Picture (cartoon, helix red, strand yellow):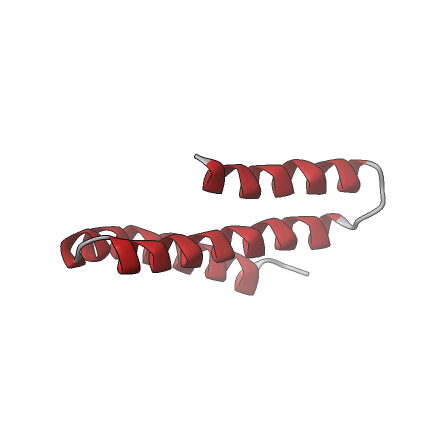
Length: 79
């Protein structure tokens, strides 16, 4: 449960900073996406070390799809 709190807290903090005008919206959403990426990579590594190979295969498909969608969002979003 605690690993879910970090991206949520980063999203809330970035939302407040963007609303206050201290951070540009472009930077704010990019930071949220990067935090989500790092969370996915960390969770995949934990599953690889502590879980079974079958679990890793099942989860890796969904995590890869989320990672690909986020990468496309960052790559193709107009600046």
